[in-house]
Structure formats: structure tokens, C-alpha cells
Length: 467
Image (tube, rainbow, N blue to C red; front, side):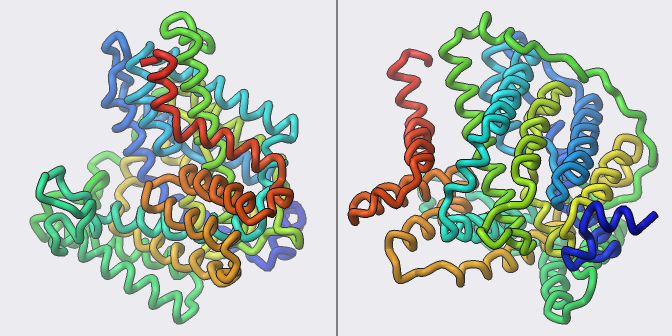
């Protein structure tokens, strides 16, 4: 029974074990389980053009179902520890930019259309060719930038770093804690979790990340039961009254593929779809490259194994997310937590996907892990991914400057796509300035041109009279 699974997933061949894969699958799930709460909040809080809102219970079901199915498919088809779920950022675009222009079925139809077009790019080989055209130092910079990005996500999710209110006298965009100082039990849980995680990693304890999440969840439950904690954020660490919750599949299939064209006009739809494709395209590219590099799975040429299948499955996830009204689903950066725990194959996805499937019926129980208990894993993995910075040649400005901008822009703009775009543009410009334009692959020229349009989308829309 186990031998065929080992051969199929190449568990032993990749230096892993079943226990590491299982631990990795659990770690990935617990660091991204927040999406079961956050995605329904984002989509459910918005109204479409006609004032309609999506049902929260139906959104929980749709989010969990798509995450479960597509994560398992990625594990079996792509054999990489890359979990998928509704994409943050993309769901906000759908809720607050697209839905107000049309009905919800029309908006979700655009997501399906975007996913289908991405699948076309994969089938034609263009998406894979772009990834293969990226120079190795930029791939390393993408990985490092993602490391800083997810560490920043961890600090923000835990409340260790917060956005300063829009006050005229303030010149600083973020601050320590909620008031410039650390306060409250939840932040203490996070700080203790970071110390516990890095201590266990330094001692090379097996299951360090997962142990930290479990221990700090238990501590959080105890603290919440005895102390007056005002807010834990999205999830409160308390034992629920009802363990089971019946799934509601009412949103599945409620989309209109071309309905948006009739309601908002072809030009507006084209610009919206272009923005979605570019964001999804390069977010996934950065995530896949960064996590695979951290797992040590890049081949001798620095390429991702099974890349074509991985990208096709990711495109299909966007289609599935739109068809289920869960917004576009994409490869999750939190998969890095599983890699940090030792996952090296798609077997870990069977565990993560299985837990999302359980969440269809046990969502009250599986969402008791507060962000403050899971976020230390993101900080620790950010450190692990940061170590790849040593492979970049910082003495060569034609490499170092694009690499630096890629690394810096990702966390500072809270976007993987923005970091990649700025890095591409800087690489093309600097290579041209120093007389090495011929070293730039033609696909990078094309991608950079698209990024120029992407960054200038607002003035272009005004120029074309879309707004």
C-alpha cells in the first residue's frame, strides 16, 4: 500500500518521509485556514450593482470545497506541496471593483473567463516559457521578496504591526502594535509563538512549526477562557457549542460567462480581465518559484518540476473558484509553512485538502486557531526563505538593482505581482542602459511592456473614458 504511494509521490526520492509530509500538510492548513473566515467576510460584505449580497454560509462552503478539491488535484497532478484557495487581493478586486459594476453572476463569470484564458496561455506554452525565461538571480530575488512578504503578513495578521489611522500629523504608515506599543493578550501569544518556533527550529526539533501552532492554540484557548480579551481578530480561540455545520452548496454554478459584456461594455470588461490575468499570472509564478526553491526542488537548470501541469491546475483553480462564486482560487504563499515543516511532495496536499474537506462539516471546530497562533509560522518561514539572498551577486548592478527592487517592493506594496513587475522593468532598462539589451529574453521584453500597461492602468482608463 505505502510503496506505490512512495513511488508515485517520490517521497523517499526527495528525501522526505510520510510523517514530514503529514506534518507539512497540517502546518499549511492551519496557516491558511483563516481564508474560511476572511473570504466570506470580504465577498459577503459587498453589494453588486443591484444591491444583492452573497450568503455567508454558502460562501464558507464554496471556499472550503474549492480549496479541498483543487489542493488535492495539485498534489496528485503536480506533485508539489502547493495548496490552493481563494486568492486574497483578487477577492477584494471582485468585491469592491467588479461587483459594483454588474451582478454577482456576471462578476464570477469574469473570474471563470480569466481562468480559461490563463489555461489557454498554459496550453500554448506561453506561461511556462515566461517562467523559464526569468534569469536565476531574479528567481532568487522573488523567493527572498516572498520571504519578507509573508513575514510581514505574519506581523500584520497578529497585530504586532498595524496601519496607522489616516491622521494628517502622522508621517509613518505603520506602527508597533495598535497604539505604538505592544498591548493585549493576543499579541503576547504571537510573541511567545515566535520565540517558541525559532527556538524549536534552532534545536532542529522535528515538527517545530506544527508544535508551535498547536501549543499556542492551546495557550490561546486557556487565556481566552480566563482573561478579558476584547478581540482576537477573525477567529476566537474558544471551544464552539456546535462542532458540526451542514454545508450549503447554493452558490455552485451561479455564474454568467459573458453577461458582463452586456451590462458594462466590452472595453471595461477587457481592462478588468487584463488586470485579473496579469495579477493571477505573476502572483502564481512568484509563489511557485519561491516555495519550490525553498523546498530545494528546482532542477539543475533552476526550473520547477512538472511546471506545465502545475500552471494548468492553477488556471483550472481560477475557473473552479469563479464557478463556485468563491472568487479566483490560486496557489497559496502559506504553503511555505508546510515546506518549512518538511513537506516536499504532493502527498502533503492530500492532508491539507482533506482538512479543507472536513471543514465543510467541521468549520466551527477547525477555525478555533487564532491568527496569533498561526502567524509565527509565517515569520519563521520568512527567515528560511530570506537565506537565499546570499546567492545573488550584489557586485553586479545589472542584477543587484532589479533583485533589490523585487525584494523591496513585494512587502512594501503588499503584492507579489508588483514586486515582479518592478523587477522586470528595472532588469530590462538597466540591461539596455549598460549595452546588454541582447541578453534580455524577448519574453521579458513582452512581459515588461504588459507591466507598463498594468502600472499605468488608471490613467489609461481615464484616457479611454472607461471611468
